Length: 420
Image 1 (cartoon, helix red, strand yellow):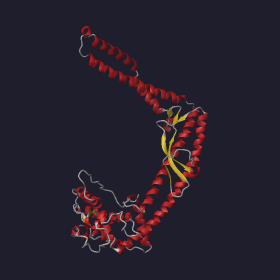
Image 2 (cartoon, rainbow, N blue to C red):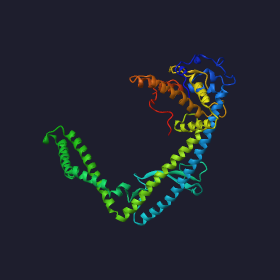
Image 3 (spheres, rainbow, N blue to C red):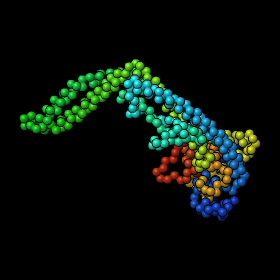
Image 4 (cartoon, helix red, strand yellow):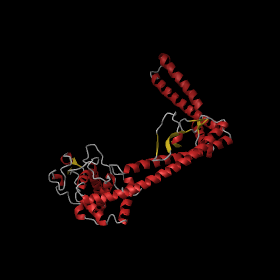
């Protein structure tokens, strides 16, 4: 794409002063509010797009190819989701067998603090309708749904991790040794505190005999110390209780627990993948209708343009025309609003134009190029300050004037064209 430097940095030639009666090409059938109120840059450009059939045709082609790519990714995501669900269901059966073995070995499983949460999958036609409905969903036409699940990882009242099994409770033993080293005399400290507290109480009730007006302060200090010592002893007792419970399991029981936790780890990973694939499916579905720029999916529109060019449906001259369409109207003054604009929720958006690809192209072809060219013009000392000014202008053009108290996000260094 050739660069038109002369247009990129020149102010908007009086666009903000135009009225509904003299904006070139504006059709009077649009709502008066499209002209009277102030608009951001992207809304302004959307209105101008509605008057440019040549530019509309280009974006229709981009959307046509983009839709094909999106539909292909939706199909692939739905398939991989279903495959993950199948694998999950098989492993979940194995988990059920292990749970029965643990029960037969005298181990009680429970869901208590420390249990792990993730997502589980099940065939929709096997879903028990008598169970209270929880948050669940499915992907496309898949025969599986996923929902939140909590895996029981408390064994006879003790929360156990795979690391505890693999290291034979090394961390618990280390905690016990550290507590003994620091607090081994806690019982004698508690007894000394008891004597000091009793003495202070006597001094409070028989001041003439013992002669002290500070007894109240001493009582408060010893009471606080007593509470702290009791908490310390409780902590030590809990550590020792956990270690005793852990050591009460036989080698065979520990082996079963380790096998169970290994499978839980695998199910958690698969469950999280299910959630991620479902999220991607939803976002891809929204991509065809979204009014916001979804830059995580920039690669969709990049591929759409590349494939359309390869098929001869779009040329470099077409892309330059789109670039110039955006660039000639831009004003980086931070103060300008635009007379004339169209909401991205308007029913007047040209048929076949995707608002997401339109805004993505605007960001890519104008803002990113402006940022790159501006950086090349700056010396090292002024680079950061000038870049932030430009990014601020970008936010202003898309979001409108910054209100008092708002913070303009800084995206220095972010590549809008980055493929994820």
